[in-house]
Image (cartoon, rainbow, N blue to C red; front, side, top):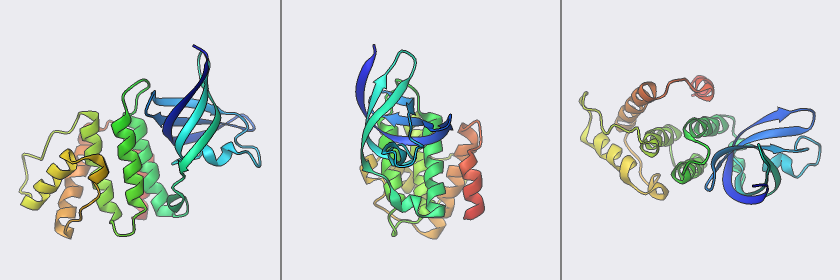
Length: 216
């Protein structure tokens, strides 16, 4: 049915279309992952320029056509400007968005995935939280959200604190995920586990991760 609809979501990525337009990928509460066109978003002075940039989170009014969506206006609650101004932080964010794009589906209930992405970007902006830990938490909880998490590894002699951290990451409310820190040894073990699970359950490498690994 054609008409306009409001959705709440975050811009995962953008691509230029034609001379002035932009195509964006949105992860939304109401429609899962969708694509939409932003007409004139690349024109100088366009209000849609910033509103349709990656990491922009808020409400979007879309024209729902027969075969596509078009962005009419947006009310952005968080641009995550700290990440936009931080080269390394931006690539962490792009990696998280790429993972969300990988797991998101149209007309799927992606509210947990959207909440995880939002809270994880907030955690990246917190100076007190080590970004490698934020990445581990995001990667492991992404598997939980997607229904692929196999539980703690059955092989390998891991510290009790590492197993406890895994249980916390898997089972705690998303809004409380980033309320703990770990020792360097536990972090190294979490990284080993997260890396192993990523290779096991993801059928492709993330381009943003390849770049991020050269920076860190």
